[in-house]
Image: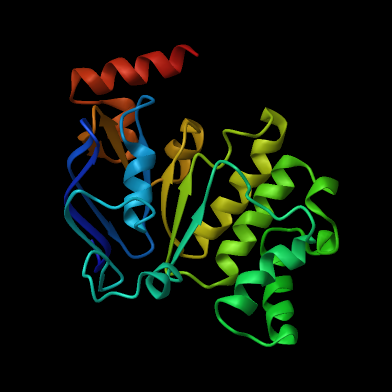
Length: 246
């Protein structure tokens, strides 16, 4: 493994009496695609949200691109510019065009002049194959196109890491392929990615490693061939057999 760009150690998260993450370790190398799978309620999305401190870990350490995210002296807003995140919901502003949604953070967060922001925004839309939809509003776009705008918005900030939290679960099945194609291209371009998703075909084909989580812990990790073809733990075998029957 090359130099870790994400190093999370012993991460715990409590919501009151509910212990959601129970000492999770996650180390991700530059240019690696790590897929996180597991049953609902296993802590996958909470782990992702801890990686950019949308959720505050109860214990543990998280270092991303050399920045200690839990150090009180860390400028978390500056750190988050290095960590792109795409959610299940698209979270686009309905009164703004696709280009407007993509350029908003470039202008307001990075302080770029409008012309430079628009040039970067159009380049990001080109990367997700939506250059011809730059002037369309979210209501004029399909769900898959809206999610690709959300990806463009994230990559326009030129993050070092991309986190994807169930990016296709809100989409009709026929729209999933376009989003996964864009993610495959990002992976081919060398983007470091951590993906929580039920798209097991994508995990088999594209992931470098797969982590299986259950009950707030990483039960097993390995290559897609190991996890899907020869899982070592009974809990993993049960989960894999269930999803393959659906």
